[in-house]
Length: 145
Image 1 (cartoon, helix red, strand yellow):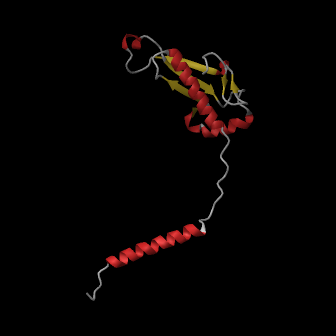
Image 2: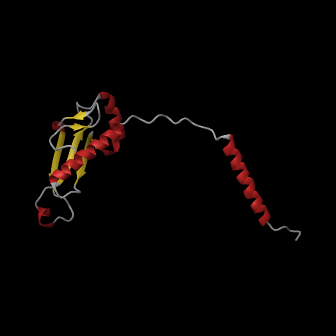
Image 3: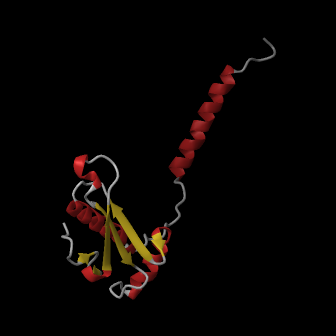
């Protein structure tokens, strides 16, 4: 669990200093009792992926490519409002930011090696087709009846 105000460790080579994270607080929607209209418990956590000096150059292009749909001018913003306490929402937003960045920074999977069907699977398929054809043939009515 990361505490608000501390650096975020995304991977073994990737640590985001707390100074590069921007937090904005606002009122959450939904139920909350008397305090719902007075406490700013919703958290928006922003991180500038495109211009951050802490992002290794080898990862920057991959992050920008994989997070392209979520970035606005190179900035990734995560909103958290599922908890009633601001501190819990801050921790949730940081955890979600780490998840999003670590998933985007993961190396691409190895390319798929195309395989061919085995001889046995081909024979089973043909045998099943023949059985099905025989079943249908026995259902047909002949014209000589």
